[in-house]
Amino acid sequence: MKHQFFKKESMERIKNILAQESAGTPVIRLYPGGMFYKAFEYSAYRFCHHVHPYTPRKRYYRVVQREVVSIGFPTSMLERFHLPENPHLADREKGVKEIWLCSLAQSSPEEELKRFITWKQKIPLTPCGRREKGGSTKNVRTTETEGWLFPDK
Image (tube, rainbow, N blue to C red; front, side):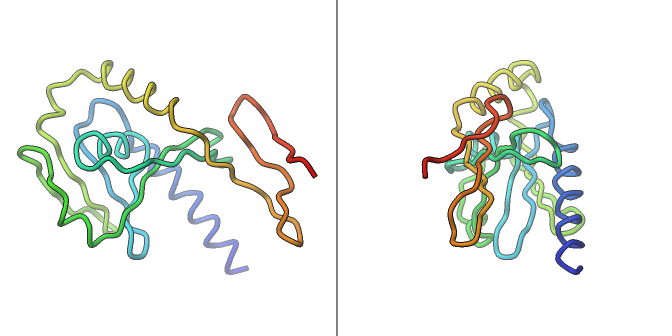
């Protein structure tokens, strides 16, 4: 029963995180998770292009019925990054860090949206498999439109 509570909590968390991500807001939001920070969607895009070129992951989340891009890195690394010109760091509730980028404030939301979509489309989808006893993959969702991929047996 305890496991289901945490699972439901994480589903609500991803919904709330994605609701905050948007084009045109010059901020990178970093969400704590143990000893790591994670950034999602636009924050991941901005982080990879303006702070450090991490390799992003794209996964399909059933709870929001779409593909979501994220990056993650150890919390200790944040102090070592060379942040863009005139960043403003802010601590928010529940350990969320925000990096406000003045340089992004001048770009148009439409341009950023186009660049984000192009970037996201180039990232391969990380399969999220269901496991059977014995560790073999039962079925894997490949993309929102391609349906299910059944591996060779």
